[in-house]
Length: 404
Image 1 (cartoon, rainbow, N blue to C red):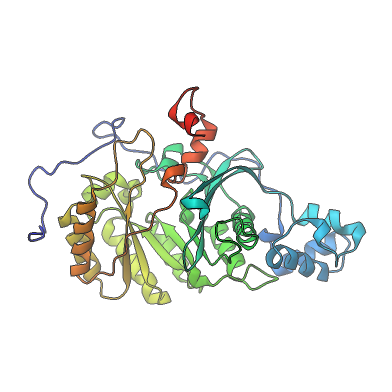
Image 2: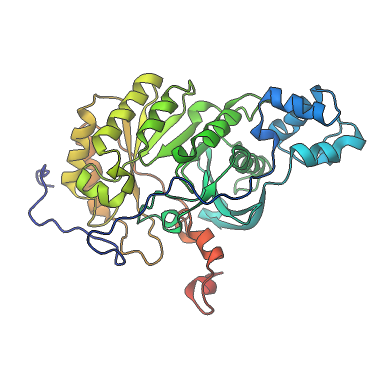
C-alpha cells in the first residue's frame, strides 16, 4: 500500500442516484401529516400516572405496580397470566392499560436462525421493522422509532419512503418487550438467551422523535416494575446529525451510547449523502459529539457506510482521522459498515481491498476501528426493505416472489 493521499485527486468521480438531476435537493421532513394517536398504554405512563390510571378504574393504586411487573418483568400482556389480580378485573385492566399496539405481519430468518427480522403493523396500518440478532456474546435488538423517515438520505431504503409518523413511547417499548420475550423463549437459534443490547438503528431518525425516544429509553433502563431493567450502557441512540438534540441528550443523565451516522468527513460529499448536513455541517456535528463524550464519559460511535467509488477513498479515511484526532484522543470509535444496497440503487458495497485500506488508514492514525458485522443481507437486511415490499408488493413472477 502506498502513501495515503490527504487531498482528493483531480476530477475525482462521484456517483449520484439516477433519478436525481444536478441541483435537485431532497426535502427534509420533521413532522408528518396528523394521524390518530395510538391507544394509551402502561409504557407511556410514569409510575405515578399508572397508579392514577388504576384508581380511575376503581382499583387500588398498588394494582398498577402488579400490572407493571407482569409487563416489564414477566414480559406478558395476557390477562390470564395475571393470577395475582382479581379474576373479574383482569380483562378490564389489561384491555385498558395494555392495549395491543403492534401486530406481527411477517418474520424472516437469516444466519441459520440467529437473525430474525420482523415486520409489524401498527394500529393505523403503518409498518415498522425490528431485527433481533444473536451473537456469540450478546443478543441485540435493532428497533424502529418512526414509521418511515423524513431525513431523505438517498441510499437508505427507509429514507426513500418518507415519514409516515412518529412512534409513541409504548410502540417503541413494545418492540423491545416482544424481543426480550422471544429471546427468553428460545425463538432464536441456540435456545433461550437474554436480550442485552438495544440499538435505535431501525426505521426513522430517533432524534427527530426525541420525546418518545427518551421516554422509551427511560422505560428500558428503569428497574422492574417501573421498566425493563436494561443497562443504559447497552442502549445506543443514533442520529444523522441533529446537533441541538445531541446536546439535549447529553443533559438527560442517562449514559447511553451515542452513534453518529456520518458517512462522509467532508461537507461537499456529506451535503449530497446526508441532507441534514445542509443545516449542521460536519464540524458542528463532531463538536457536538465531542461535547456528548465530555458530558457523559461515553465513547461515541461513528457509523460510516462504505459505498463503492463514493466515500471509500483512502484520502477520505485520512481526512476522517484528522477530523477526529483534532478533537482529542480516546473519545471515539469508528464502525465502517459494508453497504447493504437497496433495490434499484446505483450504489453498492466497497470492494474488500478498498475496505481494508480504509480501515488500515484509520487504525494507522490511532483511531479504534471495527468493521460492523452485518446481518440479514439475504433477507432484505437494510431497514425499510421488508416494509416497502409489503406496502408495494412485487408483480407476479418477480425474483422477490420466487424466493419466498
